[in-house]
Length: 306
Image 1: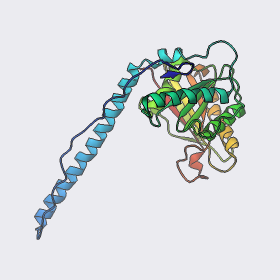
Image 2: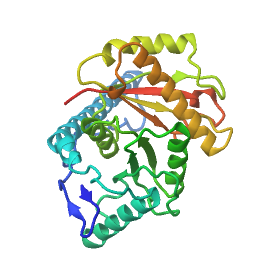
Image 3: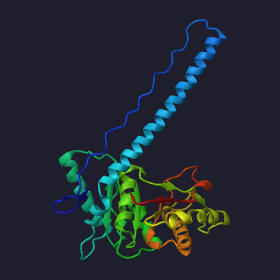
């Protein structure tokens, strides 16, 4: 974890867990030459059993990786470290200027240590000026979160997301002053661990074309999540998406509006706004053909305190 400046300051340094290995038996050898029906049946049974062991091995490996990452991320004390990164008092720089500072710091780190992080880099930018556009390629492969000191409009947040993606960011989100240190830590952990610390994710809530209105079935789905969201310390990361028809800016705005509609529903049913993070993704994570209704969705990721 690097705080940009002159010189850049290392806030946290840690190696990720060692790779996990699970050993399963080798594939059974098939009988050679002529074989009786009994031998063929025996081989089929051995093969079926072996495939089951491979499946169990893969599941065990996935569980071990998830648990190992979660333990590692908890040990980093990210909420405390991130609290040190708050933007200091004084004039705020523009989005382009903040991006340039971060890119310069990351370039210096790469020169000193090589590209040790690959695409697993998370950048936090603190600015209230979202209007400027970073140059193309400046944020290649990075996950970028912009934290503002005043609540941005959906249009401003969506335009900033489009500009950050055009600059090469793999993912981009704009969050307002209501986001807490632990919530930011959850977002950063998700970026580092590919979602390994998420407790659970809801089934997608679907929307009509060019609409952010909740249908009766959507209301029923969201109502079922309320008991979990009212638990102490829980944070809801509300992710909005859109299908491809329309401009990038319009789709980001629509995806944000869908997520904001879900957040408003939760707030009206006793879930505080401070326990929710709204993220519009536009068309950046299609799960079906671009125009498919499956892409017009909101998913709710429920984060519980470690």
